[in-house]
Image 1 (cartoon, rainbow, N blue to C red):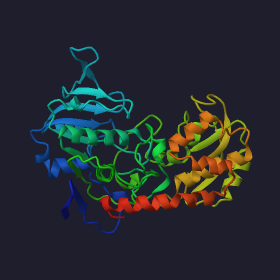
Image 2: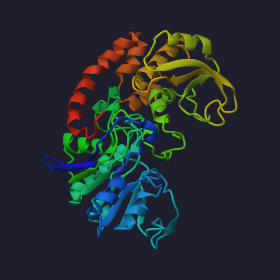
Image 3: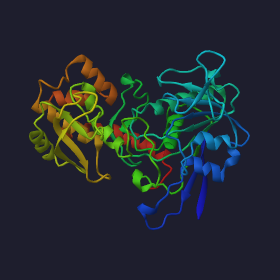
Image 4: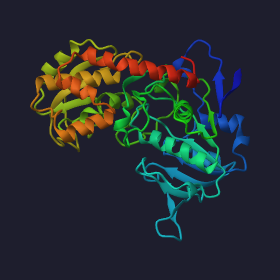
Length: 411
């Protein structure tokens, strides 16, 4: 039995499709994502419309068809906007630089810089903007910034927006890491949300739209059978890598832990190996000493073991280098940011001359990605790990209080 709930908030309408769940059977679960719910339950919302679609190669449905092709069965896809190089064959237009999707004949526009704001006339004669992409659950994923830009543009153009929801691959429960400081806005994030936001794409769209006053006429098509604490493997869905370095659905959790560490430019995080972001490596690391030091923290949900890997490209390519591997033992209690901060702090304590946290370029890179200066400064100042972690919790509590209003799914 499927219950359909229509929830109306001031200037925001969204649909929630909530399945009645019996005893959890993760191996048999098949989450119905937004595009599948739309096609089966609400095709009239797009039928006969002229669509602009903000999407990515990751937007496949439960039968492995792309959202563009599903939409094209019921509507005229006029414009495709993507944040990457377009992912399928195009036909050149009459104007130099114009390209059209070979399957739908829609014009294709690539926006590689998420801070580059298009002109409001980008929509042409489209009368509905559809947004569908797979998020990674980490603030600095550029499609979140793109989505916020287009919610604002759609309001300005008086075009309604339909967001098709998808799971958060980390989970939609874990909220962790610094809340972005306004002075550190960049292409890695423009709105003050934590590093791990613990929301789905649809929930974030609602949050951005109301909390930051974007004011689009927004509808979110929710998922069926989804729970906040689900990991990707429990959804029964196929994973399409959003980038070459996020090859598996487990990778985003590791990316949140080590991605910012790689920004200082002297450590490999496993990019160039078959398992990016699961490692922290350098020729000068004593893997036994570092692993033992990290294990003494007894961090929840993660262990640290010695590693020796050879990246095939990137930093230290074609060299066997040593360090540690992160092993997630409990996804529910694992705090990726806490693990990453413990690694960076331990490395700075062991190798202060090798970790350039006071170098202006490295400092800017790590502060910008984290959206916070205090973390780096606390490591330099030798503040206890949990003291730094605790100092971030008031901002997270404030975010959680605001977030609660937009949480569609149960635990």
